[in-house]
Image (cartoon, helix red, strand yellow):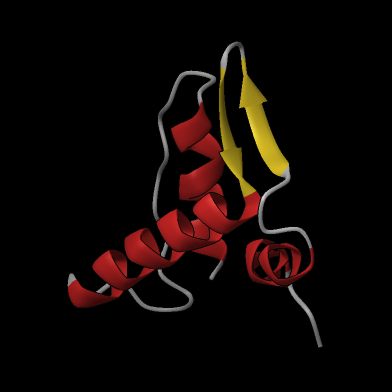
Length: 74
C-alpha cells in the first residue's frame, strides 16, 4: 500500500530531474525533494519522534513547508 510519504521516493525514481515544487525563482527537483525529506525524516527519528506522535508545523508558504510535510508523513 502506498501512502503520501511515498510520493517523493516514487517520483524521484520516475522523474528525478523534473521540478517538483516551485516557489518564485526557487524550485526543488523530485530527487532533491526526496533527499531532503529523507534527511529530515531521519533527523526526526533520531530525536525520538515515532509514527503516531503528534507534531505541529508553523511555516510560511515556502519550499521547506513541502519538505517538512512529506518528511513527517514518512
